[in-house]
Image 1 (cartoon, rainbow, N blue to C red):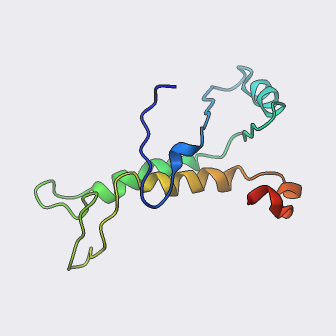
Image 2: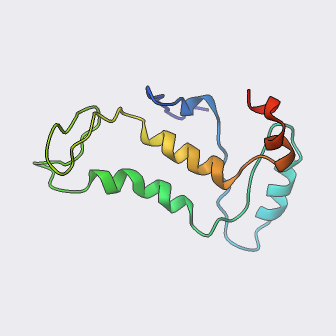
Length: 119
């Protein structure tokens, strides 16, 4: 409840809450997953073969390089050169991470086919 979250101009990741259950094998995590999924408005998925590592590497990959001459700084444009780009607002990579989580754990097919649930 006290987690720090920042929305960006590109998305509002703070408008949703996520729960991660991290557990070693044979500890009851599948039972816990099944129990949580019985609750209304809750949608958890099981193991994902480390796909969440992709989200974890987004920031570190962009921020690598020479600290005295960075190729990437939040909220600053790179006007020329091979890393040319517009300013990337602070918190924007949360948009990509949130989308990845939603793709790895989509709603049931019947809900996706019923567009009323997405308006």
